[in-house]
Length: 278
Image 1 (cartoon, rainbow, N blue to C red):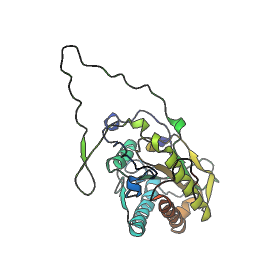
Image 2 (cartoon, rainbow, N blue to C red):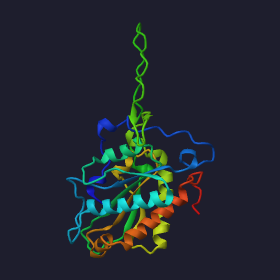
Image 3 (cartoon, rainbow, N blue to C red):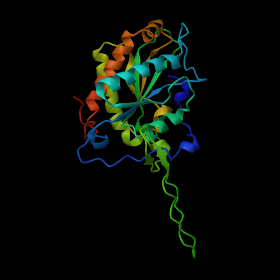
Image 4 (cartoon, rainbow, N blue to C red):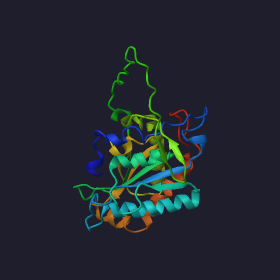
């Protein structure tokens, strides 16, 4: 995994609140999707622009490999599942890490998939991995004190929440949610998606690194206000993985596994959070 994504540090202050819409209330017994139905997915092709990501043994660039697969995944989801799919970048451009989750939040995505390729000094290391955040990744902070109105002065109402344009027209009112806590309500759903995807990848005998599913302090997932996973497609520092990711068979099998997983959860994640995945 690229080192730049591993440290949870202070986010860009301009993204800390306004671009994280609060989750809408869910009817009792319905999964963590609006009205129990998935509508919008954001795919995040890692890196881009001046940031090449990791480099393969034979010169493959992570930013190019993941963008090509992201485009194919977008087409497959739109064609076969008839869902709206947005990419965090439409070409070879630089996108700040926090802006990626912010983009998904602004468009009220139901699922955030961040695609990456891995690297290791051990060239024999290969295979896919799926990462989510764990509750242990969060630093507990006391709530900020709320100051009362000064004596003799009329209290002023808080400013209205911002409205931002969204895909398809119109605007959306965004309620403030603390950036570093945005993923916390979704860690169970993210883990469910991860475990289901692992089963689908394993069923297709796709080479996997051990453990295939893991938690890590992955920065790009911290601000996502929806179920979110980071998928390491393979190791570009492994000759077999690099060749496979630049071909079609393995990427197509990974795409099929992701499609099946989305199909498993598109009408709602199991509830309560501990419910088994069938």
